[in-house]
Image (tube, rainbow, N blue to C red; front, side, top):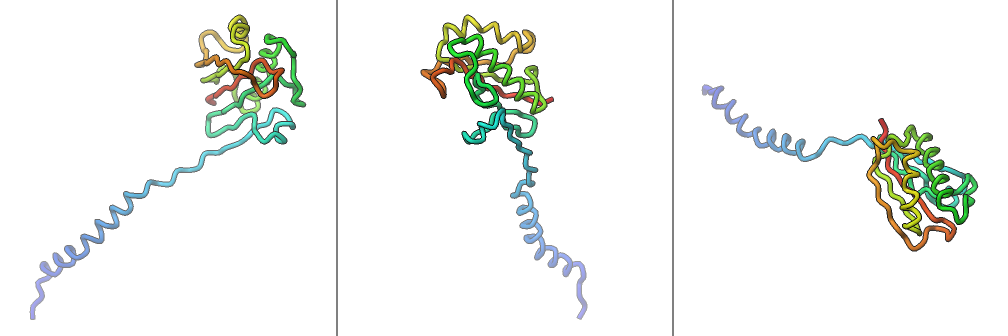
Length: 164
């Protein structure tokens, strides 16, 4: 009996083809595993750890700064009843947080300012220009709220910064 090698090869290929196609499809269905992005936290003061939050979280090249309030490193209110003083303290705290995470105000892409007194904040809005370049202002939202975490807080600011 003579074996036709060509016919035998065609039968083997025909039998194996569904398995090869199935293997190729299976490999396409699963996306390649993405490397996890490095995440780190930052605390402006020791008091924050007891409150259960982080002042900032850095994920990849983005720094998310939580609402920054007018407090010292012990968590005590700075400039009671003085919006200008509180806003200055807030920007000082944000500068410290940004610097600790390898950023500066020039890296801020988004800013949200929360206040209990919008008319006074509007009068002091130019105070922002002491920390931001007029040519590189972030997207900003001014938001009036009934109250902040403590009745003495008149203003709080959160920012998102993109690292170079």
